[in-house]
Amino acid sequence: MPREEDWDEDDIDSLLRAEKKHEWISDPRFKRMFTDIEDALQGVMGKGKYEWVDRRVFDQVFDRSTLLALHKLMEQGNIETIDYPIARGKEAHVFRATSKQGPLAVKIFHTTNAVFKGLAKYIDGDPRFSGLSRRHRELVNIWVRKESRNLKRMRKHGLRVPEPKSSLKNILVMEFIGTEEAASPRLKDIKLEDPMGVFEDLLEIAAIIWQTCDLVHADFSEYNVLWHDGQPWVIDVGQSVTTRHPSAKEFLVRDVTRLTEWIGRQGHEISVAESLVRVLDDPVTKLDPLPSGD
Image (cartoon, rainbow, N blue to C red; front, side, top):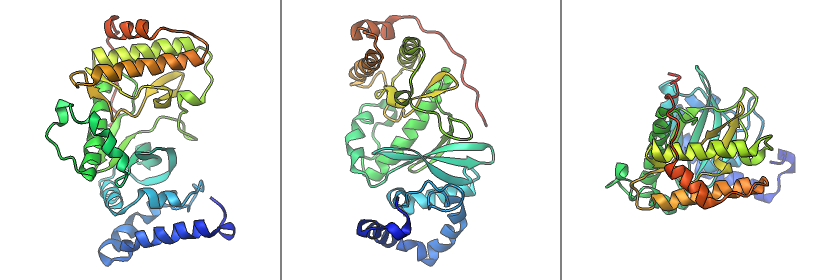
């Protein structure tokens, strides 16, 4: 983002639209609420010690409904501050945040993004969410609950995934995977000493998800694996469905194909069919549940 003295007409138009969109903040009904949390949002508003800064993110992510939900989560003590973005996607932004217990990852799903209409296929057919509303905003809220439940199930079976802490509407609060300085990198962004060993670990994870968790990730690739303390951590499990979903096997084949394509780019030629058989049939290690930080 350019300095204010260097802004061009597009920057100014963007800010004017943002100001208009957030005119509701000056309404007396909401002004006190926003005043209560304004200091806690300094990072994402381009103030305070986190000067990363792209003020247009505020306009993209923090609409009235989201700010009201954040206010409630802060009142409940689940979040103290929202600091800066650590991941940005079509469906959501993930922010580094803080609480009394330490750093957090706060995933805020976009409530106005039509892309969620294409994600209904990961909810339709999942028996855990049958018969629920298909209105866009409700679909987003369902997605948040779905990701939280999937994370809990995977952790119960010992898989390294972030611990969900709380959720409300379009906001999911999770364990932060990283150091005090930065979030852990994605697998796609690093060079590994032993990529084949990591591939073996990822196949084992895919097998545990399928055989033990009774789920399929449905978007398993180097984009959705973090490298932390020398081990892979799986993220972005909102689209994960049960093995009873009518498209579960199709999603599993796609996951295994993406993993074999990744290891192929590391210089190892591995058969998709052989890898799929291993995920479906090889005995898996029974892991202890990951501990809760609560």
